Image (cartoon, rainbow, N blue to C red; front, side, top):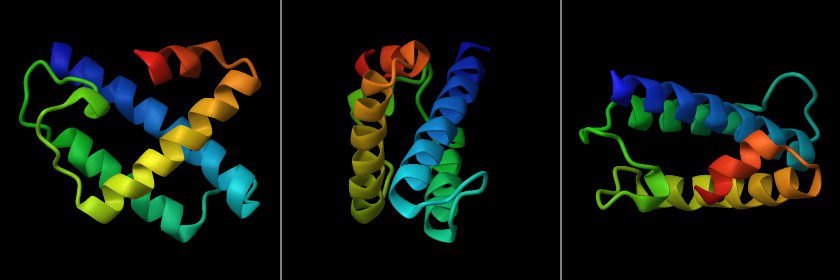
Length: 99
């Protein structure tokens, strides 16, 4: 049960961070662009198929299940969105960024 809770929380955070990144970098409003949608779908699949229980944060995971290019892309998104969250006072996202 704990793993499912972590997966749902991570999915919510991934969605929020990718939406922030896409809106601010690609100028979308309301919907995300195709490359960001593909990244989100890929990340959600990887998140859902995590073999570890309890599921750790991906940045602290000893097993890297992302392809190298997708891992680089998601790190870029998380870095940008984390800084954006700090600047704009999104405490819920800031907490996830550091912990």
